[in-house]
Length: 335
Image (cartoon, rainbow, N blue to C red; front, side, top):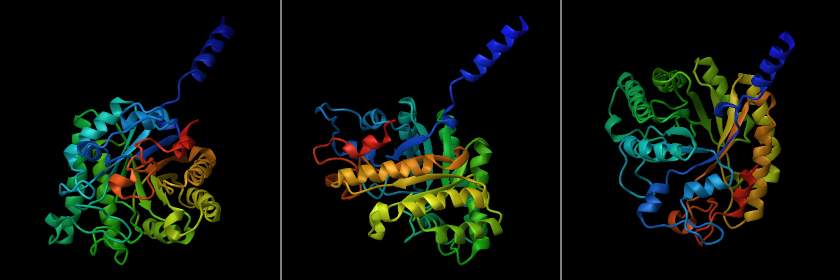
């Protein structure tokens, strides 16, 4: 009898389905989607059937969406929107379709990236201590709104592509003491809402090993709190083919895990929409590199705005065809 009970317990233990947190994340930033729909853009499957863009992405193996948040955005369809209310609405819609949720705080009224980290207009003249408090308050407010809507957020980015810091000039990497405080304010606000959420600190140029060492060595010295290192990977922007840079990405992913004892995730990737086979190969290589990080420390790969078809967005690195259908390159996300 004892042997039978042990056998039953063994089988039960190893037949428990993996939780979301154990699954490899495959997905996309889709924040333009509501604006595209509002302007009448329509999405179609390969057979010409009109479909929800989220369903089309899900059909291609995606299980995660990433949504950006601006502080006081304009209503411009391409550089605005992304308010707290719109973020909650889109997150809830995606979650109901089975997607996991990542939230990306830009701490700006519009795009923040390596070339610009503009403070929100309402925060422009605040002394540093009040600026830091606004980072906490804004983060806490958005995360609380998501929680009240029953959105289960798995990851939160504190800042978007911040190799030079954020909220310039106060949060520049020219003043790491202040940048460290701002990052920790964002971290603390997220954890105050839900300690289980993983906080990401995110840089561009995922194949640039020295850039990452410089930044995260400084972050370590300032005791910056975070759970995951987020990377962007766009060979296009450095005018190289992925075959010239993928080895450096692979090395960097593994080096970051060893050096900082953190998990890693490619939170942005993209290739040219009109070079389908090359973009598919880029995605396959990137997914393989992250999957191969030892001890399941490579969490996933997300495409940046695949549905943002060029005739609507002007974005050359979307993964959608001119006829409104998903690019075959996205088949790289299928198991």
